[in-house]
Length: 99
Image 1 (cartoon, rainbow, N blue to C red):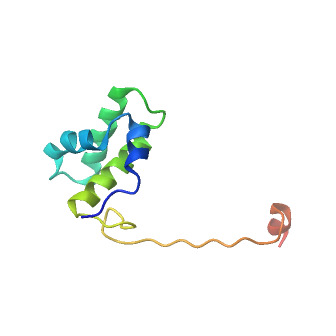
Image 2 (cartoon, rainbow, N blue to C red):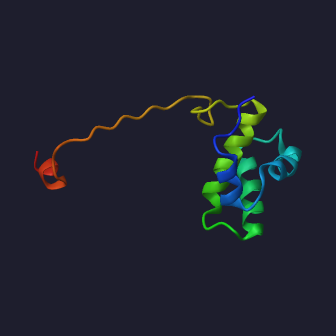
Image 3 (cartoon, one colour):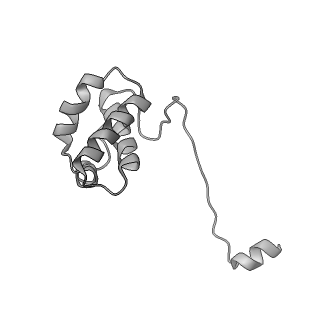
């Protein structure tokens, strides 16, 4: 079982404590990610305490899927993993565009 990254942040961002999320989402445990996120977003909107319900709903759905063992940290909805890489260059944006 994987514990979501920051339960306190989820509770603060959604207005719903994690133990309450478990109770609210358990009836939807067999649903896919999109359906979990949809349900979470509706519940967050009903609370009226979040300025970004869609973003928090995705976080809640991922955390719940991790708890169920359907997803590990870093895993995408389709089961794949993505990697990104960045590099800082000693140039201004104008210099970079010129080059």
